[in-house]
Amino acid sequence: MARTSGSFSQKTAPRVAQTALKLFAKYGYASVSMRQIARDVGVQVGALYNYTPDKQALLFNILLQHMESLLVAWARYPKRTDPTDQINDFIQFHLEFHFSKVDEVFVAYMELRNLNPQNFVMIEKLRCDYETVLQKILNAGLAAEQFQIKDTKIATLAIIGMLKEVGTWYRPDGRLGKPEIISLYQNMTLDVLGSKHAIRKK
Image (cartoon, rainbow, N blue to C red; front, side):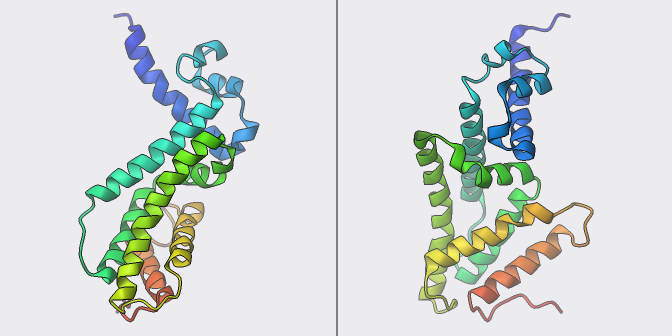
């Protein structure tokens, strides 16, 4: 049975996005050409423009999808009321969401500078929304005298910066499994926050 143009498009469009993601992560956005993306997808360069107007749109959509899916996943995540529980939940959520998204995390942080001004504003807004989630938890912990920090904004940036680095070294067959890594980062974060409620290993 002949393949329809519709089914072909539905299969090719995700391949274009995934190929661009892999190439941006490996070589950097500036070094990747539309010709290279088309070659790896297996289409002519002209055909590539049926799926994206340009390379900038590919980068923007990668970052947009990543941030939107992150925020939607957090919105659906079960919430607890105690700030210490909340910070532990945030660490667990963030790491579990990103363990399999090494390329997305790398491109989201390293290639943000290559967005045009309009696209940058939109992605930066989503990033700030996510940072606000963590900062609100820290503010609540500070108000409840569970955390001892002077600047919740700086602490927010420091924690997210620490978490994003996991993707640079985590390997599924590595020395530590996901539960051990999550517990380790929960403890480190609580220590940074001056909490007395770190989950000590028995």
